Length: 406
Figure 1: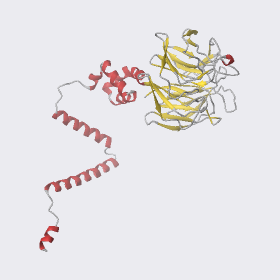
Figure 2 (figure 1 turned 135 degrees about the vertical axis):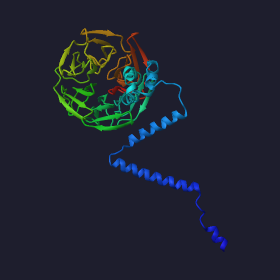
Figure 3 (figure 1 turned 180 degrees about the horizontal axis):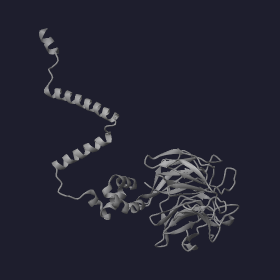
Figure 4 (figure 1 turned 60 degrees about the vertical axis):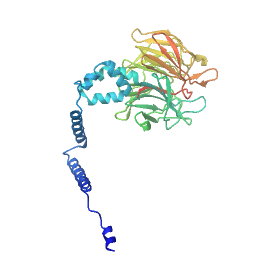
């Protein structure tokens, strides 16, 4: 019995268990002390982590000396090194490094435009497939030549419009359930999620929309009552507010082609009681509308993009419901139009954008059956030729398309 009682007594603590208990107590006291210092405003966790990182890094260098004396700025100085690294990391990562490392600031600024061209992709969402309104979204990577499916919009809509601004892709208006919309949604590529943004001041479909100087401009369109609009509104993604601007000083229109170049928003063609050939531009700095020389033929549902200082207008629907593959180019400096090599096939209500010195056109409608297209093509102004690209996952017309770097 005495032996059994002896066996039940707890074992005496070992030196190692005493050390572990003391260490746990010190850690608890240290955590409580840190909380008090942070609460009193004496210390911040960020400052503490930075100091710890520097001490640990210095200790590692002492333990494992580095013979090379070059700094990060020395290594990143050659563009042949910095450009591939920044392109692989992406523009957001490059800009974060630019903001946090003063020594490398000049290098990042030199290559930022090249990184943007290497990272930018074409985002396409919404529209219709010839029968159903769509909420799906996909993006095209010019570097790989492949399309990638992305999270769909919360709401199916066609005839919507939008652009990338303030780090997000904004999709505005359009039509859903036979209703013209004023609602706006935005896609954040960092989180891969959609969110609701403040609605426009006027519900509209088929407006001309573009981003300039960090602001989103919406011009014209067609109202819920079927009226052709000349109103203009502007969205500020920083303030998350819409502002009504003076109306267009050119003819009201919807389904116009739109592009931005040299602080001007250009509108070409469109529809108002028939296809239009007229053109105009709005100075985003001056706030002044100007009338430009008309296109060679009327067209609505055309698409436009700025490329190498010129404005390309592609496809569209002409008089008598004739779909076009015709392409013409406007020179802002000379104020003149010139023909360009035609699209591989007629298409209207497509998507177009310029990326890295090339013009991309995808989707749209095609006669005689009016089916939605999934095909895509690319124009190289150096060779003057169009090249067929991989088709989209989803054929679509009246979709939103925008270049976006992510």
